[in-house]
Length: 231
Image 1 (cartoon, rainbow, N blue to C red):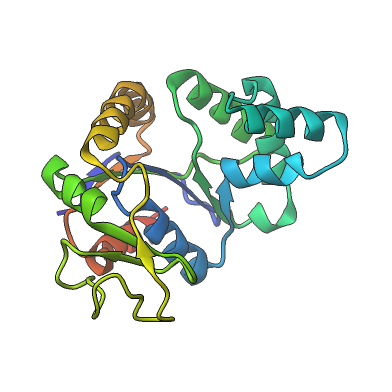
Image 2: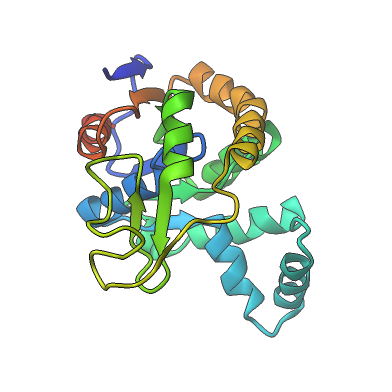
């Protein structure tokens, strides 16, 4: 069931999308779907940082050292890099922002970045999924070591035909180290603690939508299409 929490979104040719979703909600799958259908870039803060880390520059060296040490890049640098990426021509008709903002302070900074660029917030989409379903997705997830195709042994519609063997390339399937209940509980708790203020922030701005992520990926995509078609 699609629940729209807003009254009016200003009409705009841009399709700016932000996802807020718990671990294993299918955010990556839906981002890929939107990217292909609407021909807008998928902007990942992780990708931005990894790309800049390859540069032989002061900021590139700083980011590379920070990432390799497992520390977090300073927010002001992240903000600058995000603004630079969003200012590129391929974002003029819209984009999907991924991995940012992660807390309320970053949400305020993101709003300011968009204001500086003359962009609308667009649609902030919350993917709601029952916790038990997320647990099954996490513990059942298997990834191909060769082509990276993803399966789930707890889902009869997404199981490999042969156990531990990829249907696509015959590669060996493996379970990620953090795809376990303990890691999931920590990530789930962190998600709710940090994102609830963000959700409230965008709900107050009348740009927040909630969709039912318990459905199949096709039905979830349909709900997203309904939102995109009215922004």
